[in-house]
Amino acid sequence: MITLSSVRGALTGAAFALGALALLTPPAAAAPQDDPLPPPRPASVNKALLHRMGTHVRPKPGAPALPREVSALSWLVADVTTGDVLAAHDAHRRLPPASTIKTLFALTALPRLSGTALHTVTDTELAAVGEGSSLVGVNPGHTYRIADLWRGVFLSSGNDAVHVLAQLNGGWKATATQMQAKARSLGALDTHVVSPDGYDAPGQVSSAYDLAVFGRSGLADPQFAQYAATAATRFPGGTRRDGTPTWTFGIRNTNRLLTGSDGVKRYPGIIGLKNGYTTRAGHTLIAAAQRDGRRLLVTVMNPQRGGGRAVYEEARSLLDWGFAAAGRVHPVGSLQPPSVPLDPPATPAAAAQAAALHREETGSGIAYSWL
Image 1: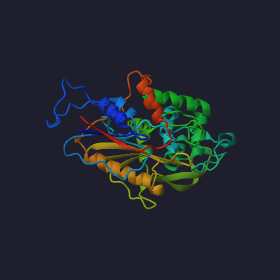
Image 2: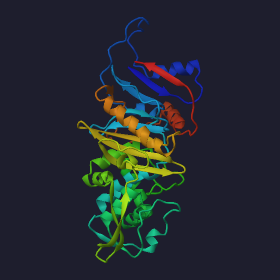
Image 3: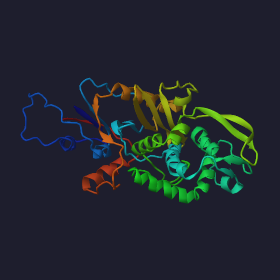
Image 4: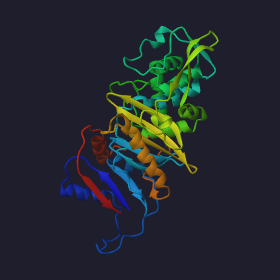
């Protein structure tokens, strides 16, 4: 079994030896180099492993190799049903999430707002929508069903709809506070919420691990899952006082793996979830698919090459790998929330790893450890 970890900066021989030793279970006695490798230990889930930088996978004999073309700063592949993390790269690296944070917004506010309720939008509710935001086309003075506003969030990533729903949920700042509490309750400790719509804001970060937690939690909610899987629908252009539309226009989900548009092929078995883009975040994506009774979820944050389609193609490669690796890898972590969410232990080693984790610059070098 091989554990592969990318490390930052130039590695000295002493540092390499220490890094490899830290990953090994202390043996009872040193074995000669010519001895065959011992049988692999039983699979175990160690969440601390994912806090280490680099690529982590625990293959069994015959497991497929990870796709080499993935250039994202951070990514993760997980089994939706079990929560097992099958492979990951810099899973806890804190990065701007863009509109993928809307999954956390929906987890927080969706249960609190009845989809059949009506609301007449005001100018004040739309006044703070950020310049250049993605919009679905919500107009002040029109009365909308809450369900229509949610479709605007999931399909068009409409920040105008998010602002209206957040006001109904208690206000912008209150919603951000609720989202922060929700993230912590799920064990998503990398996320800091400033802007519930994912608009670039100083200090707003999440991670591939946390986004996977949000996506998995959302799929457990039938209402969330239905919105996330909707490829296209009609949105009210004008409305009567009872919320019924006088005319409508078509909207399409911005997740290209779901719609198969703009040069990206639809992924077979796709069941959602959410994409995003901002200048600071680059392209981000949570995607889930089902095949042969198995559901997988991947998160991809900020591919470094390939343009706007790269986030979808890299997610496609990771999903393909995940389905091919079924039963052929041991988990390297878990998305299951802890019974009592706690911050990572503040040991010197953990502090050093956390400091390295948050560095924005990329390093070089690869360390291998054989177990």
